Structure formats: structure tokens, C-alpha cells
Image (tube, rainbow over all chains, first blue to last red):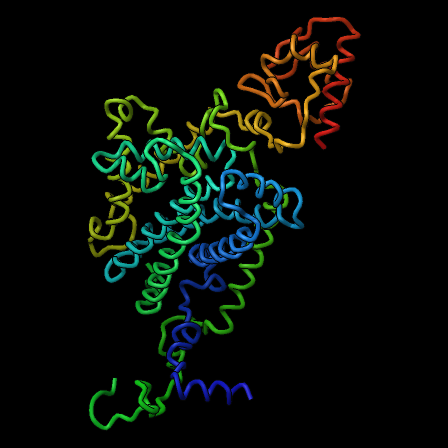
Length: 224
Length: 258
């Protein structure tokens, strides 16, 4: 029955090549920790993706309670933290995930760097990876403001002032991010929310897709 | 790939009507002991993921995510701190060669060079050798950069008293506590404690919030007289009766805040 369904779809959309790209391929010996324990370093990239999935899922649940408005943002987070069943755990996963993802990204980057795995023909994928790192830092920066507590407010103020130091475009950059050159307030919160929830995740998904397609197309770099 | 005349398609689509063989290459055509990704290797990845998830959830349960008091731009003396992975950039701006007149160096030039080099690493390090000892400059620069980031982060984090910070910034829902300023205890509080602990007991630059304290009545009386941590002794100057009123007052506010 399942085979028939598969064949029916396959005849019309030719999914077998897609399936082969995603799942039906060989894992070489030198990346398999079952054969060489030191190959666990190849897990860092996959674990980074795993934490990203945790971030996406926990973030989706957080938006069910979060209100991006200076009157209610902190109250909604406090309510989630103290009243909602398992709210503390979901918020905790998102909070700690934000740190763990940076750690895993760093380990993955170092693995690729010290193995020289970014050399020809994989230069492009390295660049995509570093851009992913920047996007992740951007997500960390914008997400830090959202609970609208003192820590968030003052850190963001400093961050925006640093952005304002950039020559020529400093003030424009600050206005783009915060909604105003001077005020960190209602507009800043809604803009950071939009950037954190729509703009950066959009860029993140697009770059992750490119990252994975390039890996499948080029294969994993050979043993040293 | 087969192209051009004679190709048959499914309907008017671009999907080929001819069924091509999709049997994977034989394992023997790959060097070494390869393994099929699906399902053998994926199962192992799944196990690694599960172990990782257990560790991650333990961390989440053991350390609830922090939340400070609601943002208040008028909070006096609040020392801003970014998330830990931005501390190194923040610390860099504290050095003389990267601040004030040279702030561009700290904001743009140094981080720009470092991250620009990271982005363009494959083109800067474009020799054929992949082993670290075959590319000493690239590896040396990376180790130098990594060491500086770790050092700057350490310098920044070591200067912070994290526990005191967390204690001084506990979240209090603003509406839930009403301070009874007619209470005799409040008069005692006003003359002895208000300067540091704030008009509404919510703390200030010098002292933590008294709302949400976990000390018992006896301990509060003792702290008022003998001090604790950075709080010096003899802050409370009054009679035993006044001390009792003060403690009752603080306890009643905390009772209300629960």
C-alpha cells in the first residue's frame, strides 16, 4: 500500500532523486564515530542544526504568550514564567538554546577551520556558514531585548549606541534598528520583535537550505 | 543526463517518463567502511541527539531562565551587560586604544578585520595543504583570535559579581505590592533603610530589593543590626520596639507580595 502511494507520487513528481539526496547516500568511514571515536567532531554541525530546531519550536510556542508592546511585554514573560504550565521550561529551552547554539556553532566552525575543510571546492559553503554565524549573533542581540527587563533595556541601549558610532551611516543604522536616533522605546521593541521573528529567521532558513544543498552536492570533505 | 529529441515526459511536465534505475552504487565502490545514512547511521545520530537533549533539558530544569525587573530607564546606576557572547566586543571598547578618540578602531576596524578575515578565510588561506602544520599563518591567526576572545570575555566576566547582580534585580510585578506608608514600621524604614533600599523597598544602586527576600523575621532583625555581605553593621539605629515594628512591616510587605 505504502509502496503504491510512493509510486503514484513518484510517477508524477519524480521524488526518488530528492529522496536519494536527502536520505539514501553513503556515510564515509572517516566521519563515522562508530569506526573512529575522534570523528565525534563531525557531530557538531548536526547538533547545531538540532538546537536550531529546538529554538524554532520553543520560539513558536513562546509567541503564543508573548506580547511585543512595552506595557505588556515584561508582564507576559513574567506570566509565562510563573503561571503558565511548563512555561518556565519552554522559555528556559529558548534562553539556554540561544547560548548552546553559539557554543555548538563555534565548535563546528573550529572543526571545519582546523581541518582545512573550507578549501577548494568548498569556499562558498564556508562563506554561507560564516553568514549563518552572523545571523545567529543578530538573533541573539535582538532576542535579548524582548523580555523588556532592565538587563535587556540597558544592554540594547549600549548596543545601539555602538551601532551609532559607525561613520556616515551610524544614525541611519540606529533609526533602522530602533525606530529613532535617541529613544529606545515602543518602536524599538516592535522592530526588534519583527527582526527576531521574521527577518532574521527568513534569512536563516534560506542560508541553511543553501548550506545543506551544497553539502549534499559536494559531499563531506575527505579524511586529512 | 538524457536531453533533446525522443524524450518522453509525464503529461506536459518536465518529469521524465522513462524510469531510470535509482539503485545506489555498490558499497564496495566507496573507500573504507561506509555505512548507509538511511536508516543505519540516522539511528546512531538519533541516539546522540537524545543524549544531547537529556543533557540540555537537565540544564534547563536546573537553571530557570533569568528575568529581571521590568525595564525602567530611570534606574540609577544600572551597569549594562550584554549576553555573554558579546562580552568580548564590549570589553574591547574599555581599552584606551579602542575608545573615545579611537572608538572607530574598537567599533569597526578591529572587529571588522577579524570577522572579515574569518569570512574570507578560504581565499586568504588558499594553499593546497589541509593539515594545520601546512598552513601555520592561518592556524596561528585563528589561535591568536580565539585566545583574545577568550581573554576579553574572561576579563569582562570576572569583574562582575553575578550573584549580587541577580539578587539586586529580582523581578517584582509592579501592581501586586502596595506599601502602607501609615504603618509605624514604614517610619522606621524611612529613617534607617530607605536611602539604600528605595522608597518602595524595591532596592537601588546600593541595596537589593527587600521584597521577595527569603530571610526569616529573626534574620532580618539580625541583618538590620549587624549587616550582611556588602551592607555594613549598625545601619539600624533605634530601640528594640522600633526594630520589631520594622521587621513586622517588612514581613507583612513580603507576605502580600507572595
